[in-house]
Image (cartoon, rainbow, N blue to C red; front, side, top):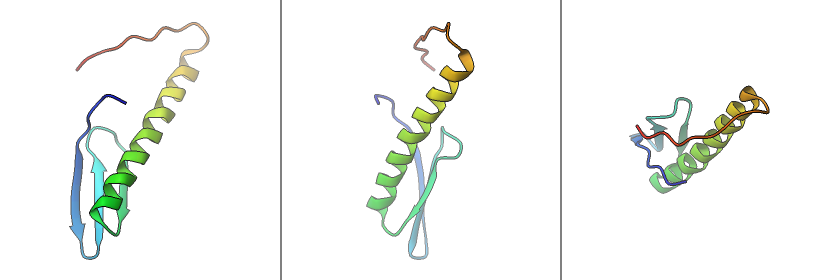
Length: 70
């Protein structure tokens, strides 16, 4: 995964809470900052793979892939 994403992170009492700003639904809560960043990384990878598979399924058998830069 070569892209970079933005983690929005805050501490709430004993918990660290974070979101990936660019991908709705990627959010986590952990007991430490390091655990939170790792959980966000794992959840982001899973969400991107899920979204990719969903797009391929929706496209059907005859599709092509093309890289698009923002």
